[in-house]
Image (cartoon, rainbow over all chains, first blue to last red; front, side, top):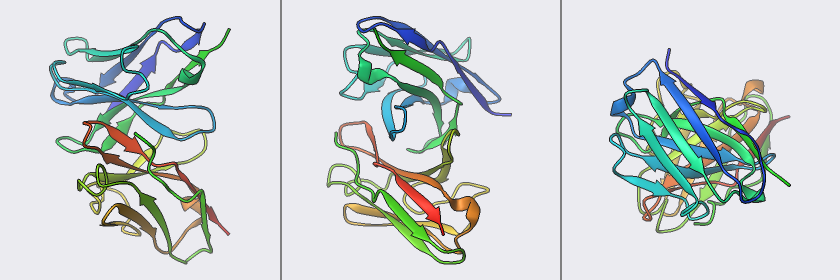
Length: 119
Length: 110
């Protein structure tokens, strides 16, 4: 079964840091680009970042550029999101997402990990 | 990148057809065929419904169909059923090498 399991969410202070992880199973992780998408409570979906198969090509949403860093470890089948300089507006459920192979659409979603930024 | 514009809510009776619009710009929807749609039930992760404007993934009912004209994409649900009641989001790849989601539409089955 194809599965994505996020972890690492929790409560952080403004200006603080968190590192999210996403463990992938049931497919050849190293052959897929991967994404992070977030959803603030009661709000819509927002794309955060993507990374290519070998971690060389990376893109970020303007709202997180310079503060968040996406990375991956293909040997561990794991995707990461290092979140620094956290702000209240970063409070959201963060989804790890696998695209449909070779396509610009989001095929497999994890259940999400909640990040709350509050003093 | 501003969110794509969707109506806040759309409703219909069982068996009817409804259409959800998704309006962007010439830098996203108007520039690419890479529009996709997602269904999200409360408390659940989004579910992939349509990709490349009109294509349906395996297992998705043919009651769901997509289209695009200019800077506006649309999702049509025909033969509306109770289980179609959910939030729906569009998304598009953009000329900034990023993705933008729509504002979301709540579908209510009357």
